[in-house]
Image (tube, rainbow, N blue to C red):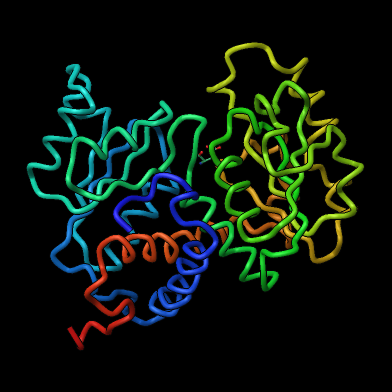
Length: 312
Ligand code: ASP
């Protein structure tokens, strides 16, 4: 795999391969020295034009656990502030020698554009409202780990779907693996033309709650809402929030997922986020093994994924 720009680049077969490799890397991460020499000598550059905690740290840890070198880049302290273009920044990073560039940008399509400006592989770490493929992969891995399979699961994706790249990638990944997905949101937070998505749509959370295996809550993305789309956050929480009462009506084994960061008390109650059905910390933990699998698929074709340090 040269680039990972969309879940569509993988399809069901590719997603399953990432999950199988992530099993190997999960074993590596449990070793006393959680590191393999697999990508020694390779360089992974981070090019984040938008804020990130989980995704950026997770890619950095994943690259280091594979013994790759990491080239950090912080927009706030770089020549981007002097007006340098994305293209010139990519050329600079490439000239220093990098094998993979992990890109996050507020505009959809930038990671795709970057592929034209570098010989390195490019990973989309979130582009505007478009996609966030590695988030969807770690979510598939988490569901598979907890429930055995993604196929046949009834998954509700809830909240600010319109502005969510996570929702787009998750719909593609979950449906590719054979899950039945229902989008639940106020009409103003549904995407344009939702009927063209391979999903059911409901405006009533209470109607679908008792009948699902997973509720995937999304963050209310205030930074992307340009118009007043809701009467008030209080009304949103009353009708569409994952409150303690609603969580109590789920099947006992149902999963409550969230990509983070969460607005506690808005889309999800603190008690629900910290409760036993919540997988948020597992999602973060699995993110490292899954991103190791992605970097391995892009760069590691000649080496064993789970070789020991002393075998190098
Ligand atoms: N961290 C995810 C993203 O970057 C979800 C979010 O920000 O709400 O898209």
